[in-house]
Image 1 (cartoon, rainbow, N blue to C red):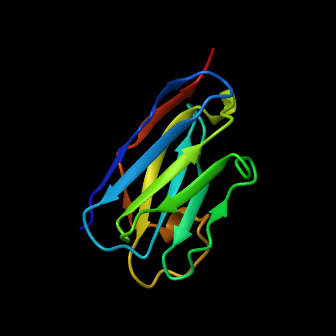
Image 2 (image 1 turned 30 degrees about the horizontal axis):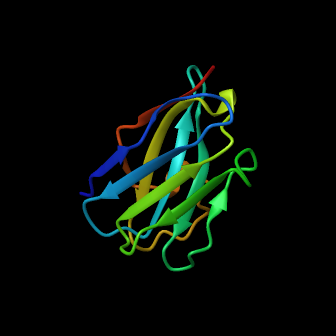
Length: 123
């Protein structure tokens, strides 16, 4: 069982930046970030598969968010710039087992989930 620990959430003004980090306790095949606003479904934000290293992004965050990994296949960061109030929500880190090759933006591609970190964009 892989444990995921997120960090880096908080309160920021519109136009500001935040950086989220997620550390996995074991080997993963891909990692991603999803978010959930109050009363809404959990939606895809960004993901990256180690074998390809080509990240995927939701249209709403393209050009503003960047997902990247550290030197290992166990840590991933999400740099969020030009934040908007609609980016507010709980951000969840997710990771998949070796062999998952489906679309990165699908919830069912991920086997492990973090507890979530709150991001609030407000003036």
